[in-house]
Image (cartoon, rainbow, N blue to C red; front, side, top):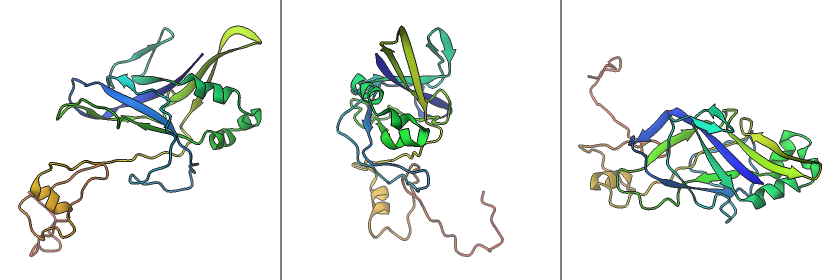
Length: 219
C-alpha cells in the first residue's frame, strides 16, 4: 500500500529563521554496507543508487509542532512517502533475510537522506535541522495487505542500532577575500579577522605570544 519514512525532529537543535522556507528532501539507497565497528567522518561519502525514493519530496520544516498520526498526537516529525516499489522489494525478499536485525540490515544496506537538490532559496533562508535517529518513533513503516486478511498490516523498522554519519559540503563562491585567503595553501600568518564555521567548516589557531603559561583568563 505505502512506505513511510518517519524522522523525529530534535527540537533542541535547529538554526535559521523562525519562518521556515520550503525545502525538498531526496532519499537514495546506499549500495555499500556500513558497520557499527567502523569509523565514519563528516567528509566521508558512500556510493548510492540514482533512484530518488522520495521523489524530491517538498516539506516545510516545523520542529515544534506535534503531528497527528492515526488520530494520535505524536512528537514533531517529518513523514516522507517513499516509492512503493521499494516496499514491494522488502515484502518479496527472501524470508531468511528477516531472521534477525543484523541480517536484515545487511540486505537493506542503508539510506542516503539529503536536501541538496533544494532550489529557489534566497540568501539567509533555509534551516539547519537535526533529527533524532534514536527516537523510537523514527522508523521505516510498511503498510500492506496480504491474501490471509483484508485488514491492513503494518511492519516497522527502527534505526537506533544502525551505523550512521552526517556529511557536510560547503560552497565558498563569493566569500569574503580574507576568508578565502585563510583557506588558501599559504594562509597569512597574521590577520585582523578570523572565520570559524562548524560542520566540517573551518578552524582557527590563535597564538598570543608573551602571555604567561598560567594565565588563561580572557576578557
